[in-house]
Length: 170
Image (cartoon, rainbow, N blue to C red):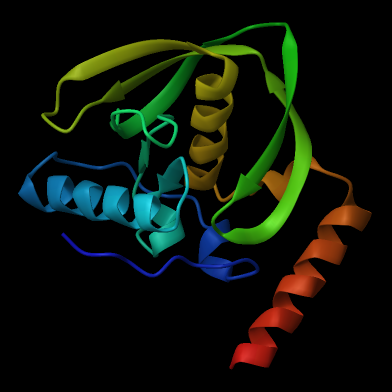
């Protein structure tokens, strides 16, 4: 397993729509393992393939708190098949938008159909943090950052700070 570099906004690759995974094979399973290792090292609770420069529809997440046993979830070609009418607001952050957070409103519950790392079809009914995390990571697959859910003024301010920070390290 390897730790992969995480792309930081405003990297244009983060705005691309990812392509479906055609076949779940050893290459895909290996990439999912590397993504998990990268996410744990960051540390974070979710990571989508586009965040590591791979334009494919897959993501990993693990909501276990520090000291709890890890509960990794590997999700390939996810699709929301149902979303609640009720909304919930959560304070979100992102490994591709380091040190910035904002309140984002999303459906409170979703039902997501996906393939697991064996290629088997799965479905999960998610609420709370799992619902928020799945929707956040699935947004990455469509080139959407949590910043796209907040005001343009706030989004532009954060992107300017990230651009300035990158220039100072180049």
